[in-house]
Length: 133
Image (cartoon, rainbow, N blue to C red; front, side, top):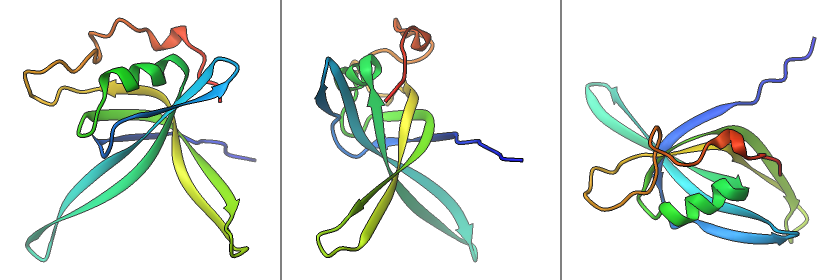
């Protein structure tokens, strides 16, 4: 029996502004990196580790991310993991994991400035869109 589960939820802050790439035929992909922190206690001392996770967001949701998110914005991303592979100039094989988002929640940063829509106040229903690559 084969198990095919590929789902991830991450929360954190954007490390840079969203970049949108037009890939032709009216399609676009938005990319950004989320810094997700984990705090823990080891030997009575508070420690922190950070994971930097690349995220791709396709279509209208990606356009909304570019419109409302910026470096430092807090988000929760739901999606699946994808592995990119390529051959480096020295001939070695390289790979990296990234998240293909199916939902991006815009969270309030606690500042008084506009943050754009966040759940549940969003004007955009994620079920209105197809999240294909």
